Amino acid sequence: MILKESNIKINEQYLQELAASALYIAAKMEEIYPPPIENFMNTPEQPLDVDNLVYLEKNILNSLNWNCTVPTINN
Image (cartoon, rainbow, N blue to C red):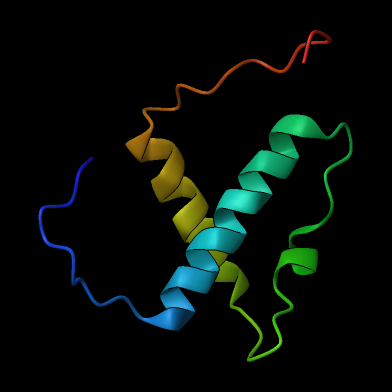
C-alpha cells in the first residue's frame, strides 16, 4: 500500500507495538521454539501491552490474508 501523504503522524507507542508484533510474527516463522511474547514487550521507554501486541499480530496477518510462506528446511 502506497501512502499518498508523506506527513502522517503516528503515535510512538503504536509504532513500537506494531514493530514488536511484526518481530514476533517473524520469530514464529523462523524459529522452532519462538521466544515468549513477553520478550518483545520490554522497551526502554515504557512496557508494551500484551493484548495490543496480540491484536496487532492478528491485524497484520489478516491484512496479509494469512498468505505467509511455509517454513521449510530450505530457508
